[in-house]
Image 1 (cartoon, rainbow, N blue to C red):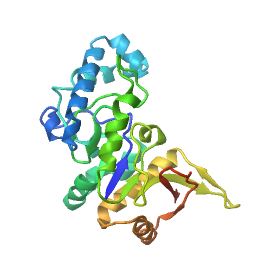
Image 2 (cartoon, one colour; image 1 turned 90 degrees about the vertical axis):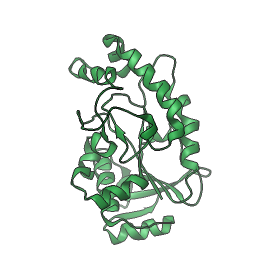
Image 3 (cartoon, rainbow, N blue to C red; image 1 turned 60 degrees about the vertical axis):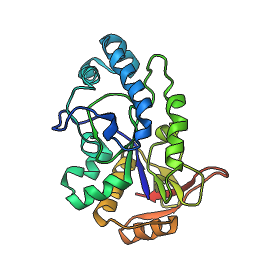
Image 4 (cartoon, rainbow, N blue to C red; image 1 turned 180 degrees about the horizontal axis):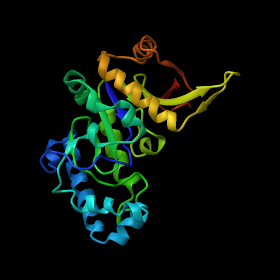
Length: 252
């Protein structure tokens, strides 16, 4: 099974791992694309003003450009520890035991705008690049879409897509019986469902943490829904469109 997470804009600085080595990242065949994009980002970041415009950064975030300049020489740390923000704070990877982290290494993937798909324990540096950043000579959707979609589709087993729609658009999950897109919703007194924002990310973080703590083996969508119910999460079929990935609503 494969669980896909979105990244976060914010990342923890520092680390104690060796500098970036693309050969150590999961999905090693993405290395040429990663190298091309990383080189372009480092080159862009040599001009701070241009980089801040391309990355849509305000004056207080100028330090993010420095992270990009040092991308290939700065220290690394595991991806789940690198990302911060609401989802990753709720996941709280630093407090997981070794068994949970090992389980996640093979089954949880973060979709990075810079590196594509990275495993939960892949060593990555601090950087700044989002799905809507403007890199000279590159349209990120066209750059990543086919390669990411192919890598996800090549996974033989359950695919649970917890990404935001913006990142799912950089590489769609396959349309098949064992592939689902999870949307976090609230249900009002009339039974109507509405999508959430802040609590969407928090619910996905708690959901993923529980997955890593309990380490189930899930082979189908039905098994996913039953496991979720046993762990106190309510899931139900969403309003999927014909010819698109099946949607599951996670009720927060």
